[in-house]
Length: 315
Ligand SMILES: Cc1cc2nc3c(=O)[nH]c(=O)nc-3n(C[C@H](O)[C@H](O)[C@H](O)COP(=O)(O)OP(=O)(O)OC[C@H]3O[C@@H](n4cnc5c(N)ncnc54)[C@H](O)[C@@H]3O)c2cc1C
View 1: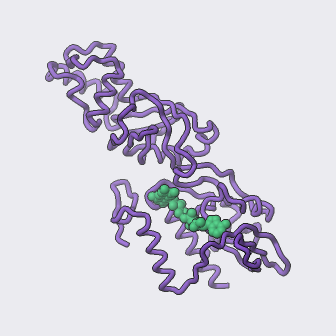
View 2: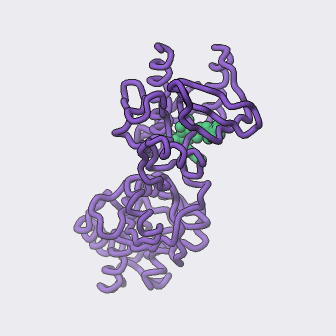
View 3: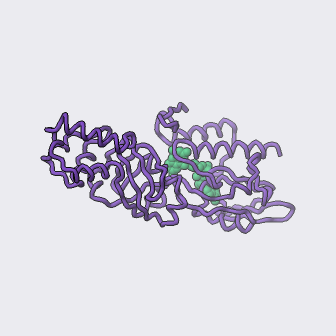
């Protein structure tokens, strides 16, 4: 599999296809002659005799006894196994969605689906540190790396607000307010005859710029030379701290990852075995580990799987 690195360090296969990653593992499993049993959903696990776990499958195969069980089930959010693991005393952290887009109904975004801004700063109202990155306007609101980062870093707080919250977008994070004022003054002096709607400040995409200008109540025919002080103030605010309200997140299946899961303190990270219920191993997303997109979740899944497999092979 050939990989490419994005400017911010995120890595993807050059094909930009997820099945490239899947094929990579399936091929390796075939090479290593690892048997795969399809359609064998694990529906039950309980403590049996002789330090064994009893595993029950949903396709009428006889229960299986196992001394060690490695859970690589992905998110436990909708899994019936969660309560059973808790019955085995395995501690868990509350499961909340992470890496999701925001639903926003706002005239400033209407009909702009598909418009991408290369670099914004976005933060939840009341928070100081923003997340930086590209932003994509979608049919439902906003998405893209900057939004996904915010959804990941504040996954728990956003879940507590039932994903109804106010956030602020700085469309020009590379230019401080004072510098932007100077820029405006310079344009007014040297290009005063130009129409405002025709002179977007880079890198704001033209269609978005036109919409911002309109939503500030600035008429299409107004030139920089004729821009009132009130309008300048409005434009500055609309560019540097545009306030939006999120009315929920993209639906359940569209989020990329789950935060929460098997409590980290309960795991011996040298082997991935539970300290509380010896014999149970946990790898990947079922653990309370989540990262941003760009390979960090995959890396966590593969690294923990490698550690567990090595430990299990030694037994
Ligand atoms: C649309 C999307 C895009 C993503 N993009 C990225 C990205 O760019 N970068 C990144 O790092 N991460 C990304 N992720 C997250 C990443 O895919 C996961 O974190 C990662 O796949 C977790 O690996 P895992 O092996 O733990 O779980 P999974 O990949 O979810 O695999 C778990 C497997 O276990 C099976 N299973 C579950 N329960 C049972 C059961 N009871 N019995 C039998 N089998 C069971 C499931 O069917 C599944 O095949 C994305 C996720 C989504 C949904």
